[in-house]
Every structure is written in structure tokens, then in C-alpha cells.
Image (cartoon, rainbow over all chains, first blue to last red; front, side):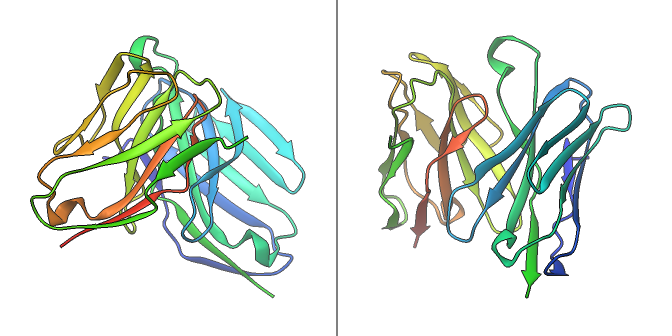
Length: 115
Length: 108
């Protein structure tokens, strides 16, 4: 079993839809949860990050972490064609030593928002 | 502010050749990483470093080597290139991983 599981999609939605992207994980030591957006032929860029459980909102984006279920989500409201990209979840533990800060990524979900 | 800079952007290698992928960051980050990304496979950690002089293996280190003599630079060395090393390589720095634009490597 992979430490982080993410549905690769692809996911296709109409403009204006609410998008839900999800990851599950098995390592209970994960404390930091990140979402990255990657446009075609570009490097991933950090979109949002959350420490431990709870919600975080930034404009049209909301990140949720449920540590009891080992489940994280990214919601995109009023989706736009410019949101079309691959979305990667990533996690790291707070175990200390050299493992601190080392990120484990999901496979990425390919999202297309069509006009 | 350049962030994370990777060179070269593209490279074609013949089997058995060697090369070094360069990575430089100007954000004074201690943490630096090398990932490879294969289609549909996400990002796999090759090596990482928590500071100058300290490096450690990631998930897929075989066939690669790294060094970290300064905070800014974290080069990745490929010895005896193999077709299985055809991939896109990303360098990143910082605990939240700020990525470079990648190096597309093809081994033929």
C-alpha cells in the first residue's frame, strides 16, 4: 500500500463548477499537508498548506484535513479554465532528524475545466 | 528573486554517458531535494539534503549521486546513464518545497 493515495482522474468539469480533489494516507505521523498545482511542462507550485487538522481558505480554494480519517481535500469554487492543471497532494511528518521536511507526494489528479 | 534555478532545461544522453544536473537556490533554504517525475507516477524522491555537507537517500537513489558543499547548490550526478533514467527531474528547496522548472532528460 502506498503511503499517499490520490485518484489520478482525469477529472473534467464545466466552468463555474465546484471541484473536489482528495488524498488518503496511511502514515499517522504526517503533520504537514500541502497542495501543489502543476501546469503542463512546468514545475509544481505550492498552492496551500495546512498544519495538522482543520480547514484553511484562500480565495476560491479551501483545504481540509481530517486526521482521524487520514483524508485531505482541496475544494475549488467557481472553477475557471485557468485552473486546468495537475493537482498534487503532499505530506510530511514532524518526526525530527533528517526525516523532518521530507515530502511524500500523491500521484496527482489531472483537472480540466472547460468553458 | 530567481528562486530555484535548474540547468540544463533539456538534455539527450547516450547510454553509459554521465552528466550533472545543476540546481541553485537564492532563498537561503537549508532543505533541498531532487525528484523525478514519470508520466502517471507522481514525484519520486531521489536524494535530499538538510544542509551543507548533509545528504540522504530518498526512494529511488540508485544510479544517482549528490553533493552539497554550499547552501545554494545541490547538483545531481548521473553515472552510466540508462534508458530507465529518462524522466523529468525537479529540484526543490525549503520545507514547503519551492520547485525549479525541471530538466527533461532522455537517455537513448
